[in-house]
Length: 399
Ligand code: PLP
Image (cartoon, rainbow, N blue to C red; front, side, top):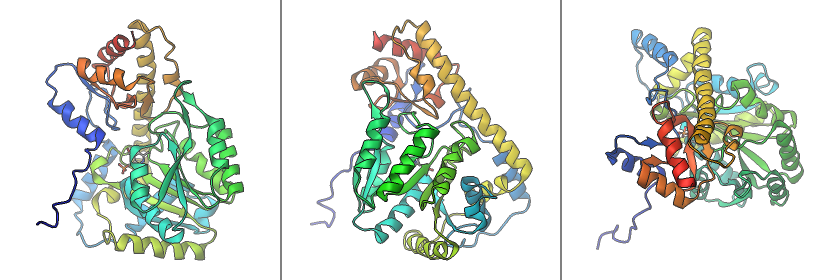
């Protein structure tokens, strides 16, 4: 008998499985709004000019590929720290942030989860209901019991902030709360600055550990605007974990560029935390890869390239916003009578459309419009070529 004979088939990843189905779909007009990827107006994955410029410079001065330090490229880690907290911020100035390079935002979350599990083995993890589908699996995989806090009211198609606060107020002291820093995935609803203040007050009062997932900095209102929430945690004097992803903001999905920053009480504590993060990394994959982080560091640390990146990121952000507005107008023009204005109140790459599973299946089967069964659609995959078809299709299933 084989040692593997009892291995069960794991379920297929729902979103990636759907992309395979989409690629096999031979209908001439179709739209893949399932996967969380930004496409440009021509439906192409962008290769940013700032990335190309950095790579060109790197090619003209080829570098060797030795092992990186366990915590990654120092210039990269410093750039992440500056982006997340502000270069002149007190935590960066007083060296109380421990930052490591990570394999994408997912890697940052996983390093943080493994670190926290060793530190607080009995703590519960709370994620939003609903949340990015990998949060539950990732924190359960790290050994935690994962519960959720209320976030979305499906009936009202809106945030349920009172219920969110009530859930957090009922959390056991020491629980780890995973919060979307901006551009909530999947709902597209963010809490307001004033609501963040209330959440932070509860986190403080209940002794919870905040873990911010910042996968979309710059996709909401702007780099500084989206990052402002971090300053609120700093001002409250809290310890904090933040995972960063450059997958979307640099369109570097496959390079796996991310980070984890841990805001500590002082410099000495930060050096102890850093030493433990390095143990987690060393025993998982030893040290991170070179290329993607070198590109991001080159862009973030060069004033001209950085300005170019900021312009390109703003273009992506504004294109998504325009697509939202055109989607709402297009739905109206296609005869949808219900108020779809809530789509304009959502932010980031996604819209929780409020469509049922049955309606989403009809969209896929009858019209080749692929979103998730939960009704999530990637607005960043809409373009002038597929918009009218998507609007017509939604209008038909809403009839
Ligand atoms: N966190 C959230 C909320 C996400 O939506 C994503 C990607 O879709 C990630 C983390 C993971 O990012 P990465 O691809 O950099 O691992």
